[in-house]
Image (cartoon, rainbow, N blue to C red; front, side, top):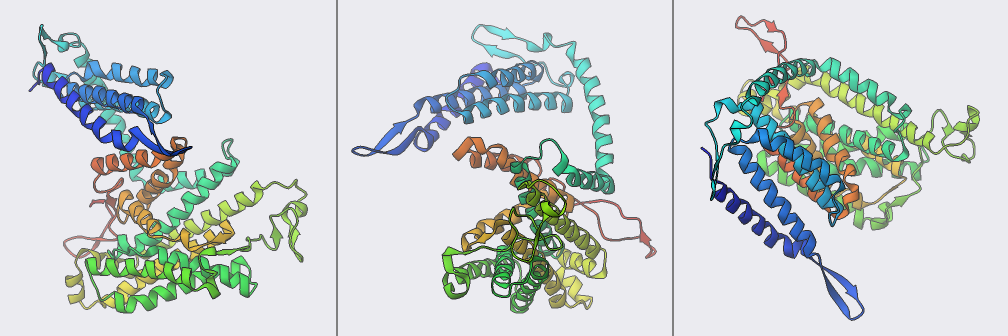
Length: 507
């Protein structure tokens, strides 16, 4: 049922006023140091423009709901294009205006595709001067939108069939990642972001073993990450062993810590287990801060050795007893050589973890994890040792975190307790949940969105986290079960007890 234009205008105006009142103390006034003390710098124009954009967006969204998407779609798209050149007060408002126009256009097109105009009752905008029927202007467009909808349905079905072939998607991503350093846009900044994304993919895949497969909510995962990083740094500093020797040792130390912690902790369930793991992560951070004789306290550890390639250093002047990589191969020294080498190291580690976790899931151990996640009491009644099964998942997740921590230490060359706060645990857990619990490919997509996308908004300065948060809220509204809430069961059985071909199950 259509709502009158007066009602829509009042609704949009009321929404804009509320937004202006809320934004005034948050963004409309800023304190700054002046000659006579603190001064208030007013940004009322920013608040006014933001309120105007909200007014227009709310009004157009209401008109789309009334069935006028055919008229709104081109206007919103045109506004998004024009907003790129509008002299708005800030870059953030310009981004909001551009994205808002495009989002409204997509919303209008989606509404027409999902609910064709021909199915709607005749909707009219009621004004004080009479009635104006917009559907008369787009009566011929109904047929075109039906054709477009049919074509879009076919494209979406083909895309879903293509994406359902995980082997094809995985192979495409693998080729893309291997070739990334040789592409024209592989700058130093792009490679650093790619290394960071791969590190979080590795961490999320490790946490997915604990949370996604075994169903154990771990809020202190960053503790094992820190243990791996400090283990490598201390081993390299006090024993002089190289990266390739200390890497597995750091992972084993983190796994041993998880094993020892798991015995008393894994007797707990649900929220109690989550709270204890949260406390473990904070205990690790506090120990690193206060044990100054070993960890150098809040000052951290610097001068952590870099990895070498069969004894070849990626430095202009290698340490004594080593040769430089560029000298051995007769190349000109370039700092990008070390960055590319680190990229391939973390790529190999992430792929190893992904392959390892995928194979584990199809073993009896992985099936036991899934059984405990779905119904712990029923699985224990079958005689499965719940402590051993949970302990295996917890220790293996800690092993992966330790390996990632060792790589983080050698990449940074410096570590401190500030790098291992609860925020890291929350970020890794958000990646697992947003991507779809238990779905490795969804975790990859979520990592790109959570870790990579904020870098695109870095020019927004203090507003980029606001834009990131808004994007997260929209994604969770659109896909509450995760971006790829599809999980392949490890095995399916027919009625006569025979194993059946694997099929996808919605979760």
